Amino acid sequence: MRSLIRLTSVTLALVFSAALYSGAEDKPQMPDYMKPYTGSAEFEQIKSLAGTWSGTGIMHGEEKPVSIVYKTTAGGSVVVETLFPNTPQEMMSVYYEKDGQLVMTHFCMMKNQPELALKNSDEGTLEFDLVGGTNLDASKDMHMHSLTLTIKDGDTMVQEWTPFVNGKAKEKPTTLNLTRAQ
Image (cartoon, rainbow, N blue to C red):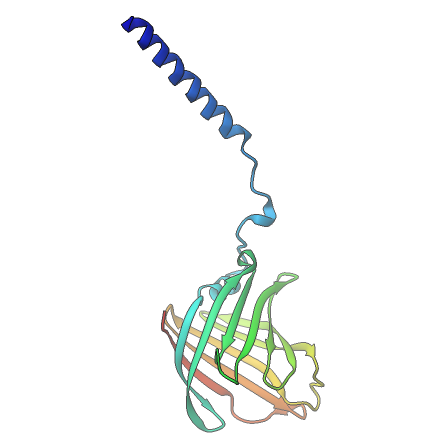
C-alpha cells in the first residue's frame, strides 16, 4: 500500500511538473508596443525627473514660490510637466521623441503652444529652441521661445525660460531654482 501511495505521489509530481514546464512555452509574448519605452539619453534624463519639485523663481523681477510635477505616461514614451499645479497659472509641457529628436510642446498661459526641440545637450544641460507651434506668429506674438534645463544632480535643477515678442527676447529669462520634494 505504501508503495502504491509513493508511486502515485511521484507520478502526480511528474505530471504537474510537466504541465508547468509545457505551460511556460505556451505563454504569449508581450507585444513590442506594450514593452516599456527606452529613449535617447536626453529623454531618459527627462524621465528621471518624475516626481514633485519645489523652489523659487524670478519672474518679472520678483522672487516667487514654484512647484512642478513630472509624470511619465504612455508606456514611458511621454513625460508631462505640470508647472504651478492647482493654481490659476497652471501650465503643462509634454516631452516626447519625434522622429528620433527630443521635443516638447508647452501649453502656455499665453494661450499658445510653442513646440521646442532639443538643439544641444552637454553633461546635464538640455537646450531647447522654438521649431514651431500653434496659435502663435513667432515674428510678433509673445511666446516661450527657448528653455534651458540644467540638471545638477538627481535632486537639484535650474530652468531658464526665455520669452520672445516681436521676434526677439523680451526680457531676461525666467529662472526657476528647484529641488526634488518627493
